[in-house]
Length: 560
Image (cartoon, rainbow, N blue to C red; front, side):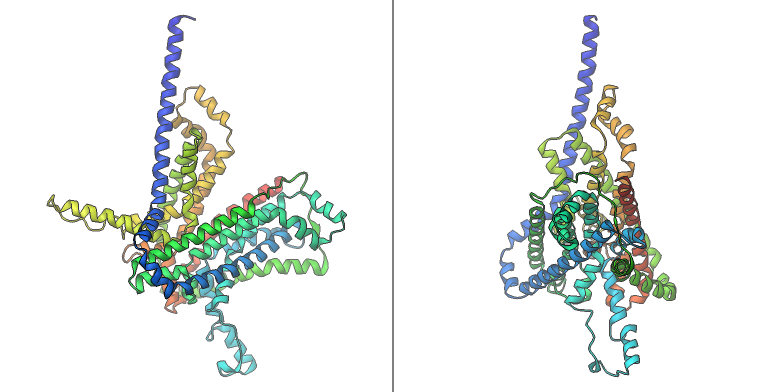
């Protein structure tokens, strides 16, 4: 080969290497910028709280102990409830075969489509003094006054625990079911050969192996409990989330609200540490076959079916029946109350957020693929922190920096003799979508990372040897393979935005209502029937990712 040919080849390779490096450098900057925008509200909360440290002492002497105590009691009850219900259901459908077990395996996830605040509205409507249940009991037994009989109060601390347990146990169920299905049948067979009965084998072998997944599910359920506003506000249980709204809006104490938000962040960090600790040194590899399900017959089969059917009926069936009944009678009232407008608002912000999070997640995962440095990987991990942070904390953290930007723009317009633009970011749809993006970025990241992990690096290496630059490799090689993962992440984000309440309540523009906010407002005013159709739409939309997830898990189970 001539000197000219070698020089030309070297020049071509050098040019392609420089183009690749420029692309990786640009993606690295994008990853750092996105991580910075995600962390901005958290840093704003910490900075604002540190700047006003006197408020915490006043709160500690007045309302803070009540907020903290109620929050701890609520989280303890929910942790116990979801762990028992989710783990038990997962073990039954994974280990045993009984009538309709195939239907139960995916139906047990359906209560996750019902937001906790909607379940609270439904059960209050059913179980309160003027509801049909107590009315039926009074008519049957001839009771005339409330003092004639005792009936549990649904609007209470225990009622809130029940609502969260019924709607959040699928977090534990889905993860525990996957863990149980991955366990080798040899483990249980060895335990039985050593003289362990079914119960002892479960507690000594199966449960410890599945414990990391169970702990992760409980942690997710507790984060959702800490984030909730609808159930605790409707049931008058003063938790930290209620405290943020109460101190800020009713007491007009922004500093106090920031201090409570910082304390909520501490709760989240403790949950993350506990979840990591639970998984430490508890990694097991499933060796061999998973084994057939044990056949149950007679009374045991009926009991297993009833145990699985009960949480499905209580967490999904009853809410759906009640909502359908109210919606069939009050659908005209719902339309007059602006259902189509509120549906349009919900679809708008949910669609935009899903598109933004999917695009950013794709760019960040691609950046980590090109540059596997610790800095880029850390930026990707930090970008997913928002999902662990309660919505009320994110909302407060966003309002302060956005208000500062608005004030700066308005001050800049004055010397230029331009009309003040007013609120450009805070109190607008931009702020709302920003808050959604920060909170739900982790969902898109997880879906895209999972899809990218299944793509061999050899494919992109081959594409590069053919002369494709990184942008074209992403567009022509990875995007077709990642389409399913990206769509899955976008769908999950879309549904979660539809259901989100705390962020929407604090960041929405004036007179901007969504399905979630209007349902909460009507229920708070004892007019739940008028918003039943709104609530029904939320539940039906929430079923979409659950159907997709159930199909995926079923396909994976069939491959095992």
